[in-house]
Image 1 (cartoon, rainbow, N blue to C red):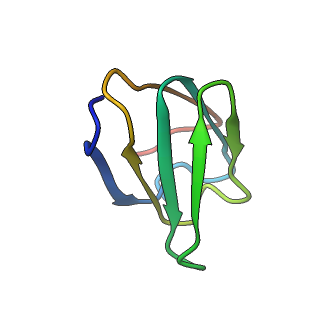
Image 2 (image 1 turned 60 degrees about the vertical axis):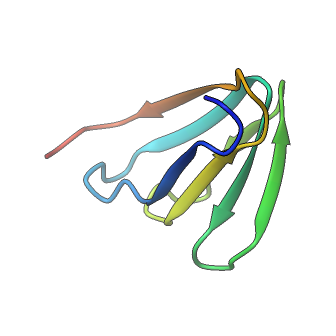
Amino acid sequence: MDAGDVVPMHDHTNRPATSHITIVLKGSISITFASSGKERLVPAGELIDYASDQEQHMFTALEDGTIVLNIMRGPYTK
């Protein structure tokens, strides 16, 4: 991802009872949670362990070359 690239507000309600972790491998992101409106800056090497995969969230890359890894566990339904 390049600086300013956005993953729009979304949730994972189609994935009940899942775990969701985001790891920033390179660069940094800003993540915003819809329920609180709070923004969190996440640099490379840090992770976010979402309290609930149902919570709406979005993120924005803050640096060119940002790499983010999402790990999700649990059943997937469409």
